[in-house]
View 1 (cartoon, rainbow, N blue to C red):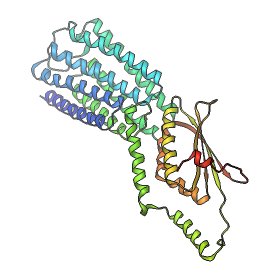
View 2 (cartoon, helix red, strand yellow):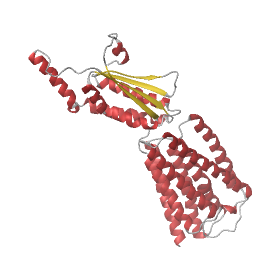
View 3 (cartoon, rainbow, N blue to C red):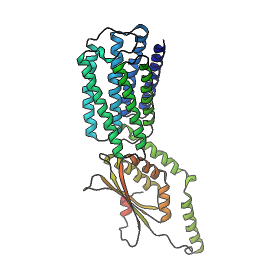
View 4 (cartoon, rainbow, N blue to C red):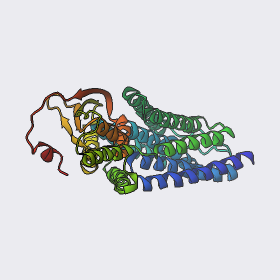
Length: 381
């Protein structure tokens, strides 16, 4: 009865995890979270069949459903979701999807129809009840799982653990634990320990999905584009509120009023024009994502920062992984205001997944010559 209770609880947790991951997928659609939802559903269906098996002894149908869920669908889609979450290269993603179809369709058909040994009991039966060919196919699929997870870990470590990197690493490590526990139970059965380990697997999968559901920019999941538009729309609302005018801008306005009132300049010397050049080195395949973020923040600066005289983002034709952003401010106060703007802070936060190195050069203007229409052409107000 202990095994029955533990199996029932694990199946119940599985349905809860499936519902939660499905909700995450509806709220923030993405390939990774959809894959994890499929993995959770596969494991849960297998555990639901196992409830019947531990109550009335396993048969061919319950045995097949259990192993299709915990030995094949669960680990494979769990690992593929981790790969989609961590790896940004489009070619690698496309290749993984080709192998996914191979390691899903063929083993699924064979596991569903191949002959099995009917000598079952009321504990979790191991995979060895299948003949050689089904076991070989499952072994191949599980090797594919290991390759995907290791590649995902390497991709995250290579990008660095700053910013979002630590969260991404934790997500993939949780998925690694979930996959390994599911594979171990499928291969060994483990009696009453089987449902306990599956509880751990589901908890790790659920936790990984919850962590990954936090905002994250993925340039290849086009469905997330509206999310970033909404983020900057929120910034627009804040900036449109007259109560939120920065204190330093008010101070500059007060100084200008003082000059008008007394017919001359104040005693403080006028501030000089300031400039900043920022050179970004991007991670492989991150150009599109960076350019999308840069376009959004340029639009925000143009609309809401009158004292930022110029703010431009450039590609470098001879260096596809480099971007140059330069800004010219009316004075030091304008630069400080710019750096405190919500859209600039958010831009810096979102860059962590795209940039591997940053070089900042600060400038003080000495002499310059420019056409009057330059700023209007580059930054139409």
